[in-house]
Length: 503
Image 1 (cartoon, rainbow, N blue to C red):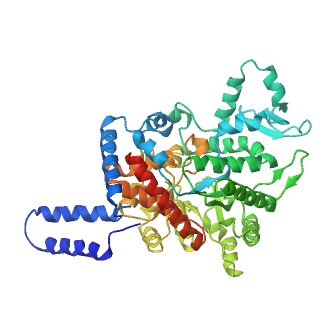
Image 2 (image 1 turned 90 degrees about the vertical axis):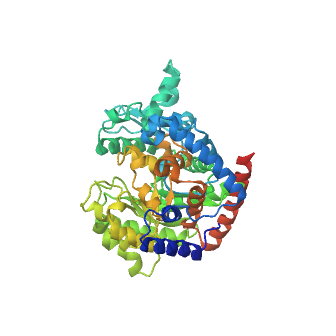
């Protein structure tokens, strides 16, 4: 990627300093240089576009101007209400076709559209359903009548239930509603972060019995890669709990089986789609566990990395940050790899909070101290200038997930997202989607739209998109040689995208 040479940046800065030091009144040149310096600093500002890219940039700018004036403005609205407007946007159409590199922050149970789960998986043989006291669903595959569960109705074979149901479409739609967060009135349905997080975790539990069935586990992962590939994504890093999968007779498979399954599926997928670079797993554990369980989890992570070096990327904690234990609580567990001479990369969720001054708010500091490779969400980073400066100097990027942050009630109007300031400063970051299946969004296109239009307005351009796309591979966990080849392949796709977008 061509960037403005360093000597040119210094030249502009020195000229500005010279103009600023003289008492020459309101100098238009000084104003122009000041605007140029701000432009150069923001994400993509130093990217030099070729002639074709300039033509596409001009086309993109006209679309931006129209959309900014047309109203209502989608990033200012809740995504559930904005989605139909976004999907009518010519900019969104352009972003769908744009090669987006990698998705670096997505979770295992949130990568496949729930319609596939309901209309494919729940129609398979031996699938049972029960309904909880809170009118939520749970599923399980079994060769016989499953054992009853507390607070759940008697298990019913889904095939039999559908045979007795007059309107199967309504039944399937009710399952879909249980497995997503979508609602027509999100502000009323989710009045607080705790309420939406509780609903969020119930949706995961609803999918749990489907996805952890061993045959489905492999099909699910393959379908997830396919859905991301269709959204012009060539690489994925999946944060995975690697729960025990089960067979039809109830036998359980361990984490080694799950990692082996992931490796096999990725190899099979890349054989079918050679331009897909691959996928890696970041092993995760819930941040509500105690210190003893955390030590065991980190030991498991080191074992998995040793046994699956090509598939295993590193380790992280997941779950609602405000209600979980802070990173410092796990300091003994997180110190184990260094003590044993093992290089286990960390990819910590940190700063997914708006509670300033709490133990949880210190997670950003501890993530840096534990040498995190990337910062997941980093919503609170703007409130920590020292940590922000350290992460910038250490080139530790923030994984920004706009739609997730809005749906989980950290911010309502995406124009006010802290990432807008980070991008204005040129802070290293990538755009990702967290749990797109639960939000009803695509692999990356919807999040790219919200970031591009919401964070930057008219200040972002094609150079911004190009830098973000390249960042997604630059900051991946891919080995250096593979990364170089992937970036080269991405640039070929980018040039083709630019040319076709001008036709």
